[in-house]
Each structure stands twice: as structure tokens, then as C-alpha cells.
Length: 180
Length: 229
Image (cartoon, rainbow over all chains, first blue to last red; front, side):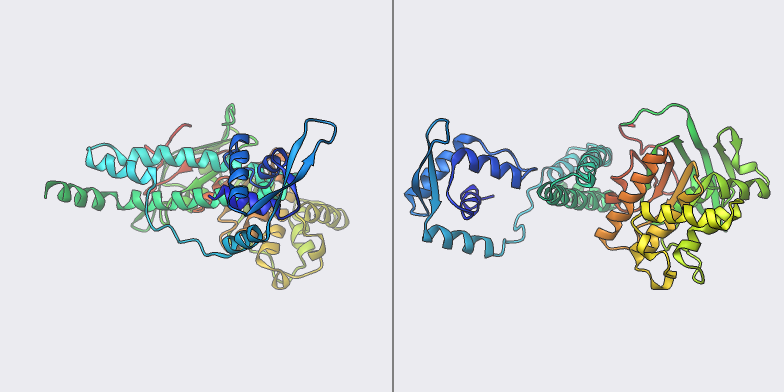
């Protein structure tokens, strides 16, 4: 995830200050890890240093004075390029569930029981997200984020189901590799 | 997890063999009033057979099915038909609507069979179609409906008689994901409003996520697959 490019994307709508950017980030990416204010300000300073954003003045609006930032032409190009780039489809498999199943096989644990418990946890999270996205008052960004999360959990669940079915073969093969 | 009291419908130690193929080998399931339960498992794990036994469509070889104190597996055919007509609603993967009737008449038919006059049945059917967002399809025949529209009509038909339990066997199996989502959301909303219990059989975790909990089947049995229940 590129916080830089997301902030550039939010600035594409017009000049904005850090507080507003943080608020809009959380609205547009409701299921994302919340963005810390400190990270917003550090990133903005780096964008200015790299010529992708610039200070557009200050805005008091009855409260403390805030620095307004806007996109530069280079920043506008950078964000368009980035959002148009194809993302490499997961070149490495670095999933914790996968790792735990392999380790459970290596250490003579009970991967089947682990997969069953993990399935329950995944389904519980899917129920929360399903309730969230089917709420008639849910904002579009929340629905899109919940959809994304549900589909990824579903992909994990499909993998877990296949693994469960393969476990007998998998255990035998891994034990053989371990002995060799 | 929702905490429900005594079950409305319960299956214990069910065994069922089709010819020489065992379909169920010790399946348990409890469904409380107002509860939505998903039965999941790989193909051939006995999900549909379990649903058929619970709905009184098929009699188990061994074990018991109890509904509100009655042994469904021992009921005479006449009482079973009555249960299926008044207390149970059933929806299959393909809506199984009557092709010659309009969507409205398909929904009105079970009401008329239960003794409601034609006019009142059609009025009630129109309300049920509206609840499932299918008002505009009332005059169309099943052949003129999309898969999602047909399933919404089938759900309206299953719920129109005010059943206490709706059985749905892969109700979104023939639909794309968005149409499936609309069908499931409509089913859950209607069931929650009327306090109807739902037993949904599915191989799709996204469908199971609409339920309060999951009952998992493997090789016809539920044993050893209960987690965090």
C-alpha cells in the first residue's frame, strides 16, 4: 500500500490540509488500518521535498492555522501513472495461515484441527462484514471495502478446504522431505 | 453468536443410504425459532440429504427428526404434506416455479391451496413480491425472468404462507455473485422480520456468512466438526 500515492489521489480533488486528508482517507478506506496523523504530515513533507506537492497557503477557518497542500503537475502525473500500473499478482506466498499449516505438519501437530478453528474465525469475520455491507445505510466505500475483505477471506477458506482434503497426501510428502 | 433456547427443529444421529451409497452417517443439527443456520461441506457430503430429511421430503433410515415435539420421520404422509404446506417453505437451486403461471400466480397458489380466496391471495402475493423487490415482474412468466428474479419470486412463494421454517438448497447456486447477494439479503431480511427460521444448504462461504452459525458436514457426519458453537 502506498500512502504517498493515496495522499496524492486525495489531493487531486483540490488543496487540502493534513487533518482533512486523514479524515477523507478514513472515509474512502473504511476497512484499512487507520492512518496516523504523524504519518500524514511526514508523507506530505516528503511529497513537497520530491516536488510532487506544494504548500498552497494557510487556512485558519476560526481554529488553529493549518497548512494547505496542493498537487504539482509532477504529482498529478505520478498519481495517474501509479493508479494505471498493473499490480504484480502476488509473486511470493507469505501467508501466516499457510506457514502455520506447514509448521504444524513439520512438528507433528494437528493441522486439520487448526484449519477447522481458523475456518470458524474467518466465518465469524465474514459474518461481521456481510452484516456491514448489507446494511441499507452503508456508504459505498464501506460496501466496496467489505466486498474486498469478504472475497479475500473466501479465497483463504477455499484454500483451507482444499488443503483439508489434501492433508493426508501433504502430510506424507512433507514427512518424506523432512527425512531426506 | 446468538443464544437460542430449545430447538424448533432437531435431527439426531441421522443415517440415510441411497441404494448402497451412504449419504448420512450420523448427522446432528438443531435449529431454534428465528435462527438462520448454514449447512456446508464438500460435494457429496450429504448436505441436501440432511435438508430433505429435516423438511420431511425423505425419511431417514435411522435417527430422529423432531419438529415442535412431533417426530417428523414417523409422521404419516398426510400430516407430512400438511406440514410442508403450512409450516415449511422450500426453495431449491432452480426456483421450480410453475412455467404456465405468472410470477404473481406462482406466489398466490400456495395461499389458495391453504384456503385463501383468489383475490386475497393475489393481494398478499403482490405484497410478498414487493418485499423481495420483484413487483415489476408480477405479470411475467418464469421463462421471462432472470435467474435472480426467479429466485426472488421463489422466495416470496416460500414465505407467503407464513412458514416457521424455510429450507433453501443452494438458493444462489445458479446466480452471479451480485444477484446471489441480493437474494440472500432479501431472504435474511424477510426471515428476521417475520421470525422465520432458515436452514440454508450451500457450498459457498459467502452465503454461509449470512447465517447465524454454520453446521459442517463431512462424509455424511457432523461429528468432530463443531468449533466455537
